[in-house]
Image (cartoon, rainbow, N blue to C red; front, top):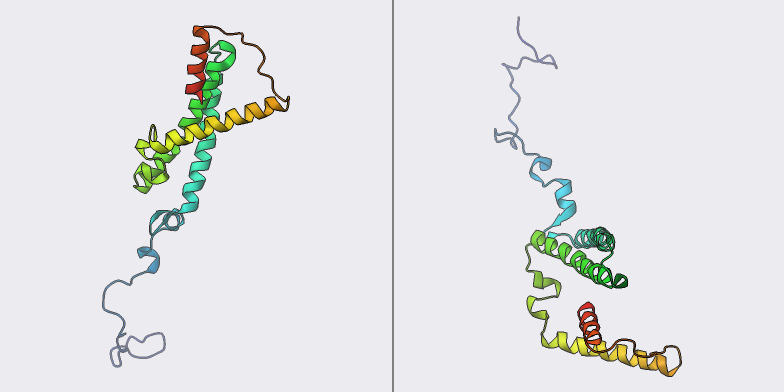
Length: 173
């Protein structure tokens, strides 16, 4: 008795011709060699995709700011909340810096690529910006006073206390 294949033919008498595309090795699957969907969703050819970086920054900034500002206000630091207010402003600064440092590490870029080089404090542009900021607030206050929408009142602080508050508000702003 002979072994017949499914079509009723004798495979030994008439073997099927070999497939010319087959080289004898295991077949390659496009799915196995392509990167995963999650990887292509978050990473592009130039690193992290722009939208994801922006989303990460915005979400982590909002979460960090909420947590750190709540911590700053959780305890009364005295002086009618002035120190808590300064601490809350510092917390907002940290909430802005931490996500940008994380993104710089993930994207393997220098932190200065985000627009704030390490030499920005005390630099020429920083001083010019500070002068413009001080001038604009001064003009606004005097304009409001001229329209009787703001009153300077009378001086209630004297001597060293005026200097302390001047330094406090200079640091605060």
